[in-house]
Image 1 (spheres, rainbow, N blue to C red):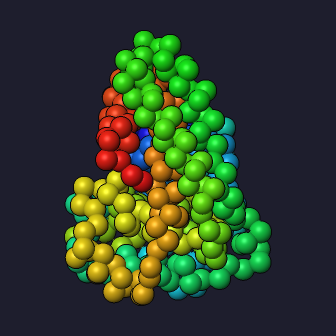
Image 2 (spheres, one colour):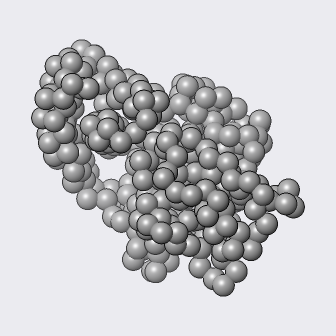
Length: 321
C-alpha cells in the first residue's frame, strides 16, 4: 500500500524487537504493493542487518507461512521464507494485525528494470522446479485448489453500479463500463472451456514485481500470500502475458525461459482464462479501493492509473485475452 497504516510506529518497532530479539534502530515504511490489507517496512538494526517486515490486517493464511518453509527445505533456493520466532512459529500478533519478518534483499524488484538474459533462464529454472515439487499431505491440506469459479464478475456488477453513480468514477464508467462487462462475460465463457489439467503448486502472482535481484544477481521470490494448487498455466500466464512489467516476454526471452523451465506447450485457452480473470479481479479491486475513499490522493491516483490501463487494454477492438 502507498498509505501508511494507522498504527504507532514506535510501538510497532518495539513489538518487532521483542518478538524476534533484534535491536531495532529504525523502521522505514515502504510504499510497495497494491494489496490494501498489507503494508511493508524495512527494519534496520544496531548490528547492520536489515529485515523486511510485512504487516497484514487480519491473519496470514497457513499456506503463506508453511509453503515457503517447505520449498526452502526442498532446495528451492530462490524462495524468501519468513524468519521463525525464537519460541517457534513465524507470525506475531499486533492489535488487529499480524506480522511476518523476512530477510531483506538489496536491489529491488525487476518490474521496471526487467530480467537479464541469465535471470530469464533462472526464472524458468525456478518455476520448473516449483511445479515439480510434490506437496506434503499437511501442505496439500491447507493449499486452496483451483475451481475456475471466480467471484470477480459479481464484484464488478455490484461495484459497476456504484461507479456509474459516483462523482469519482461516473465518467470512467460511461466510457469503459460496457467493455468491462464484456470482459466479465469472456471470463465466464473461457471458464466453461478450460480443460481440467494436472495441478501443481503455483505461486499465483509470479510477475517481475515479486522477483528481487541486485544487478544480474540471483533471483529472490517474494509475496507467497496466495499460493494455490492449479494447472501450471496459473503461473505461466505471468510469463507469457504482456501485462506485467516494463520489459515483458518476447521471442528471445521466451526461448531463455524455456531453456530453464524445460519443454512446454502451455494450454492457450487456460492462459487466456487466467489473463482475463486476473484483469477482471484487478478491475474489481481498484474500483473497490477508489470507491472506499479512505486512501490518500496519491494512492487514489495510482489506483486510477492501473484501472485505466486495464480498461484501455480490454476496450481495444483487437483485444483478445
